[in-house]
Length: 200
Length: 213
Image (tube, rainbow over all chains, first blue to last red; front, side):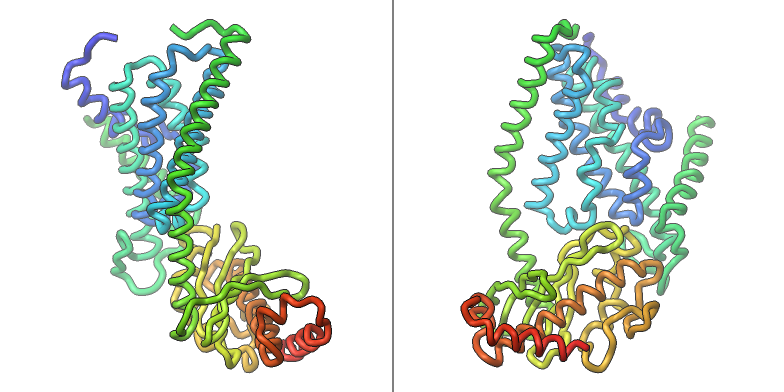
């Protein structure tokens, strides 16, 4: 592995945010994206939780990758990812029980989030530990940002509030809090994001 | 770069990874088991204080049987906080219901739920929904959602959650009636845990049944 220059290291992070944005470009991990973005804060917390797992699993997998036989690659990665997710679950229950209560059943689902396994397969198992960590940060930030943006839009339209701060009395357009609204918002944001990206 | 996929290598690799991972989890579990229990206890105590009028002394944990199912409850000098689990939309819904000594519901609170965020999950925060249980007199009004002919307004688009919540409250009211009935004779906790005396237990069920018709 040749030494990357400083700018390349930096681009590892920005790639995850823009060029490899997991939600708007790779369109991975759509299940938690649609399910947890009912409000800005929920989306952000889910993104951060995924980022935590992503960074740790990327580091660990890039460490063990040279020792892992090809045929048992996937089960090994899944065990590693599941371990970090359970770890996160225990830590959240212990130290931020309120956050755990809101995200509830979506935390265990990070195990099957294809972003985490996807980055392990596509990046961590052929790159250095440092680069893999940076990739985890970049993609994790990209995921967090995307989920927060979707959450903000859905919260504004669906509940008339932003980050829990209410500016419209009563309910918003309830459909946006439900699954159909998630698809609609994701679709429009995908279009906007890719239009902006194409121009650049 | 990866090592050869021989049976020996594969078994070795998987066993090693599993071993390291379980060790990691065991350590995390050992570190977090106490904070998790403490967090749960703190939450329970805060919830009891929320659902019952101000009480003195520590709440005492016990169990009460209603229609063949046992429910845990906390007894204080101002009433009972009964914990009831029913089936919500997304899974079990556990509600703590505070019933004061006159059989009036003081307040209710969600302990745990798996309801849809933004919809059923509002059963814990929607003031319009939980507010109506405050001071609810189960003898004067019907603890059933309006869709089913009762007096409880359901949360918009979350009838199943509302139904489960209301059912939990209704069960808690029955439980407290059982408890109040037995408390009249002797202490509730000892009365329930003394199977050698069938007579008071029978009266208890009778009272409970009549009060909840």
